[in-house]
Length: 261
Image (cartoon, rainbow, N blue to C red; front, top):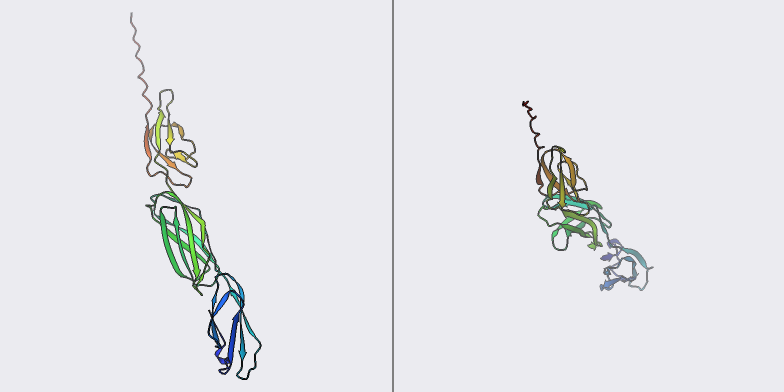
C-alpha cells in the first residue's frame, strides 16, 4: 500500500523520514515524499508516521495516519435443500459480505466423491448477494456440503472462508416391494396391500392417496393400485409398483327348488 505527502504540500528541498508501528514493512524509498508498506496478513490497527526535515535542519512535528487492517468475511446461509436424484433444478442461498465492494466468490458442493461446481462470480457490488446454483439431475445421492471462499476486490483483501453452512440432500427412495396380502371374498369385499421395502426413518407409502408411515393398507376396494414410497426429503420413488385387488367373487345364482313326489 502506497502512502504519500500531497503534492501541493511537498517541499522539494526537504527530506521525509517514514516509519510504521508494527505489522508492516517499509519498502526502502529513503527521504522520499511517498512510501510503500507491505502489511502483514494479521488484522489490526497500526500507524504510518512521517517526519519532514528542511534543508536548514528544521524538523516538523510528526505526521500520523492510523491504518486499520481488516479481513473481510463471507457468510453463507440457506437450506438445508432437498433435491431428488435424477431431477434437474436449482437452489438459491445468500452470501453476506463485510469489507468493501466489489467482491468475488467461489463456491461449490461435494459429498466427498461427487462435486457440484466449483462456480465463480466476480464484481459483486452488494454486501448481501443471492446465488443460484444449478443442480444437474444425474448426481449420485448423498449429503453435499457447501463451501465458499471469497475476497474483497478492493485492495485484494482475502475473506475468511466459510463451510458447512449450506447442506444439499440429494436422494430418492428405491421402488417399493409390495404385495396384495388379502384378496376380497364374498364375506369381506375388500383387500389389503403390504409394503415390505424400502423401509427406514422418514419413509412413507401411498397406494394412490395420502402418504402414511405404515406400509399396510387395508379396506381397499377392488381395482388397480400403484404403490409409491417417499423419503424424508420429500422425494418419491422413480417408479411405482402396480398391484391389483381382485374383484369380489360372484355369488352363485339363486338355487332352483323342485318338488318331487
